[in-house]
Amino acid sequence: MTKKGFIQQVTRGKLSADKVLTKLTEELYRYEKKYNMRSEVFYNLIVGTPAEDSPDFINWAICYRSYFRTLQSKFPVKGLTSVI
Image 1 (tube, rainbow, N blue to C red):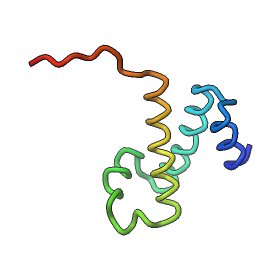
Image 2 (image 1 turned 30 degrees about the vertical axis):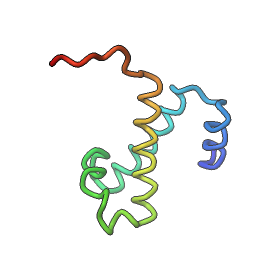
Image 3 (image 1 turned 30 degrees about the horizontal axis):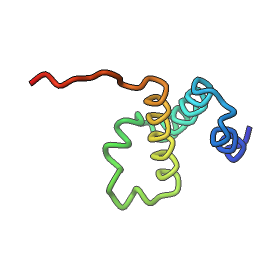
C-alpha cells in the first residue's frame, strides 16, 4: 500500500487502530535504522530547530506524532483525578 493510499484509508476510517499502529511502527523503525537514532531522541532533539525543516525530518516528526495520537485514541486516559 502506498503512503497516499494508507492516509486515505485512515481518514476514511477503513483501518483499525491496530493496523494504523503497525504501519506507523514500521515507518518509525525505518527512520530509526536510517538515522541510527530512536524516534523519542530524534523528536526531542529536532523539534524547534532549523533542521526540523528537512523533508525527511518533517515526515519522521509527523509519523511520530501520528503514532502517539493513534495510541492515545486507542487507550484513552479515563477517570484520572488530582491527588492534592
